Image 1 (spheres, rainbow, N blue to C red):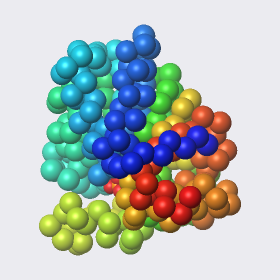
Image 2: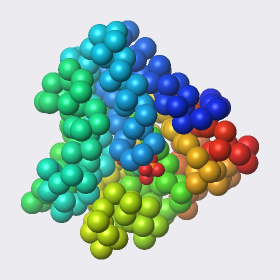
Image 3: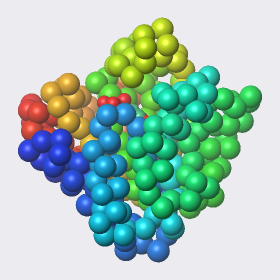
Image 4: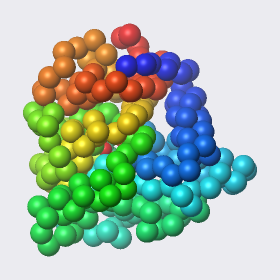
Length: 241
Ligand code: F6R
């Protein structure tokens, strides 16, 4: 795993955005795997600003998101569909039909998981996957104990994840208890992976990712099995390294 150490969140975001925009500009066709949450927001701001200033076009880019809550309406302000529209898709020239997010409102959720895997395959797989990391080492919503062989599946969210995400909801009770997430094997099929981390709250997880064992009790450690992973993290997140 390559590590890029940055001074702060702003530089972490800029470094990741540079890698992404270089690919968008040079590749004829590209499938990006995208994440939600606080970590990638600065990256998305930089992509939008680069699109506005330099005209970087996303017309030929396909995107697939990592995850979505179950039983939260697609237009709920806290759905990941809403997050992506507001923070990225509505501010770029990407055609809506090129973007994909699991449907947590599907009648048949098992079928939806299969459909999502097929859809990723039909897009030719993921060229570059952007990841954040949970304090407990989750990637996507793959909580500790998830099999490294997992494909897109339904998960019960860990209490620590619900608590961390309750900052976006009126109260903890409003945070959904389950989600659909790409599986770990799905993520590992990506050709290249960028994992971002900022702030002291991520320092222990980053230290365990870099120095700890590779096992299913710590989902992000699966990334050690992949040959093209770059961690872009700021000083605070790298404070034990
Ligand atoms: C979000 C996702 C999660 C987050 C993680 C960190 O799509 O897949 O794994 O990346 O929970 O969240 P933040 O960035 O809010 O600290």
